[in-house]
Image (cartoon, rainbow, N blue to C red):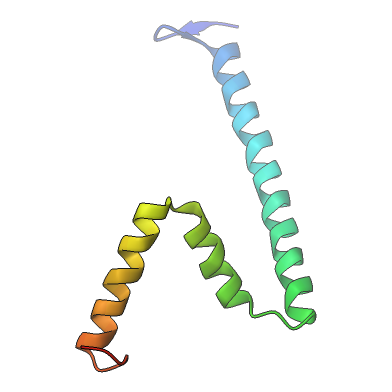
Length: 84
């Protein structure tokens, strides 16, 4: 294929095709994740809370502790929690 602007059309085509394949895989994985959540919900689990737990598990311990402390502070400031 030809060379246009310093890149080969074949190289560009390969990149585009790789991205397209990855997008297809990503869509398939997203469908799998939805199925797992649906299964969990059918078994009585709260999917909203599960998503929060997953988000928290991605954080390191220090970040998680900081977020929990800020949440507690905000809740107390709004009169939503007991404490000083």
